[in-house]
Image (cartoon, rainbow, N blue to C red; front, side, top):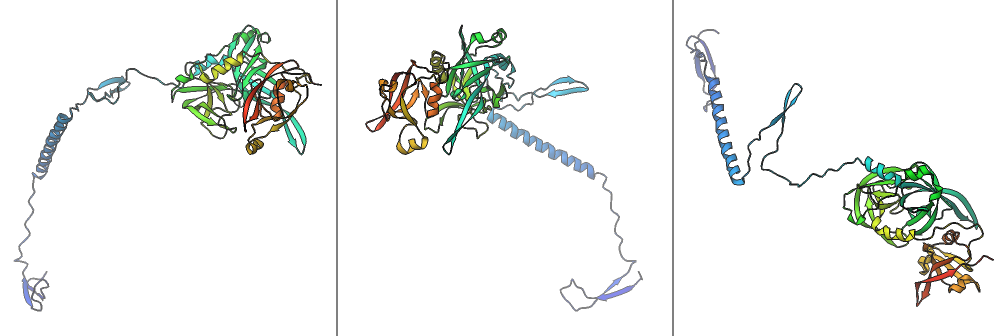
Length: 439
């Protein structure tokens, strides 16, 4: 820059504008900016300040924690940690905070999903059942029939000197022309029906002990029946049965509900055990077991339908036991030769569900008239009566009546329940009848 250079101009920062002032700049007279002094102790002072602040924070935090401890009575001291030796060093073992307890238990309860030992113990009492039956259908006035098979399960519940007694579902054996039972060793035997209860969906079948081989006798066992009234919600259970007809299988779950009321299409209701153990077609008649290896229910895939997953039902064994004991006392039924069934001497017609709904007539077999001098007339059966039970079997159609009568020949004494119209409503009347010979 040149010396004694003179600048003139406006003072933009002055309140008086338009006034020209001269400024003389002499480089020789301009004072030089003093050199900045180095502060050798600046970082140390900052460090000391931080330390003081930290001490103050810790002091006040400690006082606050002490006040909370005195007010609540809790002990926040860090527990002494133990160490476990591991390869390459040690790791601390955490200890629970002293004096702080969430729950107190008197013992330890262990829930395990391994049921293999229990299943191995009870499996010899479980059987698979195959039913041979004939399915009929009417089209345009013509009747068509087809031989078919169905699968189910059963439980060995008793054994006498002459018979092996098994329990299953009524719908497993209903309408069967032949029942074949498969045991744990793979051997098979033909079974006969002793009795059934359609309302409870229970049936008892029997196998002659003489028809069993020695290996089978040694392989099978009698199941232990438990107490379903003692079940608790959430208790672990196991379902065993011939699922889909593939053979015995095991599924596990829990008691989802107790005393679950289920309604059926005929208007009746029942109380059952609900479980999320898989119960599929073929499982019907099989066992629902508790962890003690006791039968606490009889599975039924028919109850509740087959349209949902995770919901299965079983007949409580405490409710089924008296019915099973009663059916066990009945005489084992054997089919009579074809054409040699007993004869009632009636003309009849099936009361369909629609007809029953429209006219208030019970579902069953309507007696149109009785033959003079027939077994039906002698027993007091009247035209207009509706046969609803035959020897304890529920009758809802002519086919049901045919199925049950094939076990009774001429001279057989049977008990029949009819619905009779009395005082404007149907009342059940029990009749005793000795079947005649077919003319």
